Structure formats: C-alpha cells, structure tokens
Length: 403
Ligand code: CS2
Ligand code: MN
Image (tube, rainbow, N blue to C red; front, side, top):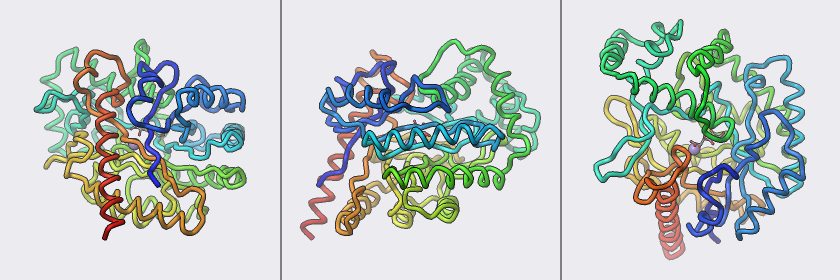
C-alpha cells in the first residue's frame, strides 16, 4: 500500500506539461476544467477529454482542484439556486466518470494571499512570503479600503504607514499584482497579465460583502452543503473544503475555515462523511495555535485530500513557505497518522482509504528560474517536495511495520 502521490496541473495553459510531471514520480494529477467559466456545468464529454489526456501519460486524474464555488453562492444571492443546480450536475458527472474527490474553498473574494511571490532564501531559492505590515499598507494606503483603519491597531497603522513611505511605484504595482491579480486569477485557473484597473474592480468585489459577517457566511455555506452533499453521497463523491490561507480574516472579509472549531462547525452543519476536508498543512500551519497532528487525528475520517508543506512563522506573525519538511511543522507525526488512518479505513472496508496527497507549493530553484510557472507551482521545487514526502512515507511505513 502506498499513498497516492500527485501533482497539480493547470491544464493546457500550464507551462509545465503532463510529460514533465510524469517524470517526477507523481502517479496522480490534480486538476480542473480551467476553460469552463465558474458556475457552468462540467459536461461528461469535457471531463472525459481531460481524463483521457491525463491517462495517455500513464497518470490518473485523482482529484478535482477546484470545482469553484461562485461568489453568488458565498454571498447567498437569489441566483444561487441555479448555480448550485449546475454544481450538483458537475458533481454527478464527475462521479460518473470515476473522479471522486473534489477540492474547493469557501473564501470570499480571495484565494491564498501573499505579499511577495519571490522572497529569496539564504540558499538562493525563492519562496512566497506574507508580511503583515505590508499587507496592512496595501489595504490602508494602496487600496484605500473605506473601513480599513477600523481593522488595525494604532501600532499596526503606524508600521504600515512607515512601510508604505518606502515603497516605489514598482513595489506598489507588484504588491497589487501579487494580491489582487494572482489570487483572483487563481480562482479562475490561470494567471492573466492584462487586468484592467484591478484596484477599482477589487474594491467593488470587497464592497459586495458589506453586511456579510462570519455567521452569515456560515449560514450560506451550510445552505450550499446541504444542497450538494446528498448528490455527492449518491454518486460516491467526496467533497473536501480547503482551509483559509492565511487562516485569519483579511480585508474586512470573514473567513470560516481556519481552525479546529471551524471544522467542528462543518461537521455539525452537515454530518455526512462525504462532507470532508482538504488537510492543507501549509495553510493551517500559518497559525501558531493550530496543532496539525491533533487536527488531523480529530477529523481523520473526513480528510479526503492532503496538501503537505511547512510554514515558518516569525515572531511578529509574518510567515513564509519553508522547505517541505522544515521542523516548524511536525510532518513526520502527520505522516504517521495518515498511514494509520489509511490502514484503519482499509480494515473497515472503506473504498476511499487511499487519500491522495500532493506537496502543495514548492520553492523556485535551479532550472525553475529558466522556465515559466504559475506562482507557487514550479517544477523542480515541487519535485523536491514530492521526493521528500515520498521518502518520509517509505521510512515511516517501515518503522510502523517493524515495531
Ligand atoms: C491551493 C489553493 O495554491 C494553493 O494554495 O492550495 O489555491 C487551493 O487550490 C484552493 O483554495 C482550493 O479551492
Ligand atoms: Mn493548499
């Protein structure tokens, strides 16, 4: 028995090809139908085209990441029922094509957010970085978000102002690009470069959440789950919500999948085991109070997909994406629990015992600097992560079997 190791592929527009991924040791692919607009049905023939293409490289399509949840569903707009109907249709079609794990998120407006996509580490590799004061400077002085000043302390505002004063025009463009364009286009699949007036557009998107607090967002999430999960159950599909990244509220937006109490809520809102979690150690690990091995253990039976990497949190709360096995996260302990859960599921006859894992992001390194890639998804950096995680798995399995 071996965990299903996978890499993400962004479809035909991904500068990294399936042929390259096939050489990394990955057996599975995590992808989406990026060419289909949010909210529309994924038809069986479209799903099969991608599936056949993946299989022609000796790989399998193990996970959909993501089947995006439209903003209208998150906001609870009257149009949501029609979009949810399409979502259910896509879930059914995927199930019928044998693709039974679907990752998605319920983060308003943003997906993951970083202030830098290319922070240079001492050995010359590049990582993604989140600097709180710079993020606040973006919010208060670049976006000029109307409510921003109410969301920070005096100390934070002073620090943000000091940083803002040091920024060049190019820095300002870069940070707006990193936060707005990259995360927005991640939601749609590929990173575009010709976004018009991103700040204005972004402020409009944020303003649509006026009056939607944590309780309201949870209510809208529960509505979605109770509509979609019965369809997932019927077609043998597991849904796996991705945690908030970073796991705290940003830009006045509520975030509701950040910590164990949120997963507790998720479980109660819709108890079915098909209502599951993507256990992303990198996202959850950006909060010191999230104990990853404990969280895994508590929600193990509904973890359907794993993103493994570590996050290094600095004393002031800033963080960066460290090497996959960096000691800041106890991935060895997590791996042990994953293997235990796999064995437990198999013993009780569950078909979904083989939870797919992927290394999530990777550092940019070596030949990655000569090749285009989506932010966070360089080839060599992820290959390194995958190789390290595979080694950890083999070693851990050996120790568990021989003790
Ligand atoms: C991913 C997320 O790149 C990443 O950090 O883990 O973008 C993830 O794909 C989405 O949140 C899932 O909907
Ligand atoms: Mn992740």
